[in-house]
Length: 345
Image 1 (cartoon, rainbow, N blue to C red):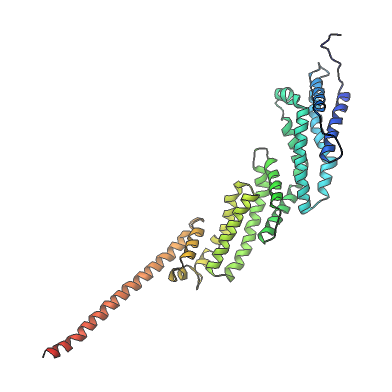
Image 2: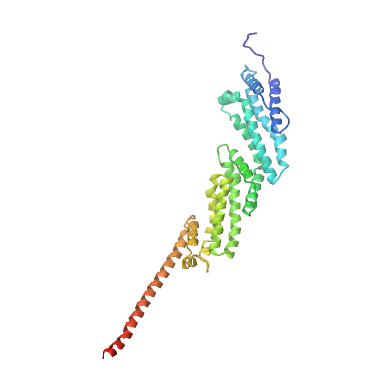
């Protein structure tokens, strides 16, 4: 036997060795007592895959190993990950999901290292999905597709609780929503379709309910203060846990429900609307009105209309006042003439 010849590894024997390494990795992820991988462990696992992929046909097991790589994730998800998620609800489910997603990414990172030779040659030649993508797709197809509806509802429920003044775990929401983004692997479709659309619909409904009460109970200045505060808090939510691309859509929903829908009622409130603010020279309130209504389409049109009416009315009053003053002065002069004539005579 030549020195460079090596013993052929059959599929069953080689995979049995690989499974020991995969089981060790699973135990580490589950927090079971297990020593970390040494450099020797890593090299043995990598070399086993390398040897099984570079043997002469029919002992080149590249395709079988590529399939078993995917099956390793599927088995772990089905036997361990999904049961742990199905038994939890609401915030507890969200925490478990964040933990499982983090563990899954660690598993993908390690297994893709063990199977790296597949990525370099077999996958590249066959134009197959790379190992990292295969690993993440398994989580998306088995975990995300089953649970994203429950996760979405739990997140929206927490957002509404925060809107009502309750303290929530913002870091948890950020981590959960990052999953919606990351699961798209560079695309925002999953975040937008599976979370954002429902969140925006809920936002509109929430502020529609609030506005219908506030417009009846509050003065125009008080209503505007609340609207401005709501917009500020929604921007704050974006900065803490929503994706930045949600900000313009979110603010548009809030502005529509709080301002566009009730613009006429708000501006024409009898004792506190735009007319009253102009009459009483409420500069701060008028500034707030300009800031708020300038952000909505054609929002300043009714404001400018009322302003025009106010200026016209004030101008007319001033003209009349001047005319009356001039008329009174003329009458006064005419009344003094007879007295002066008598005096001179």
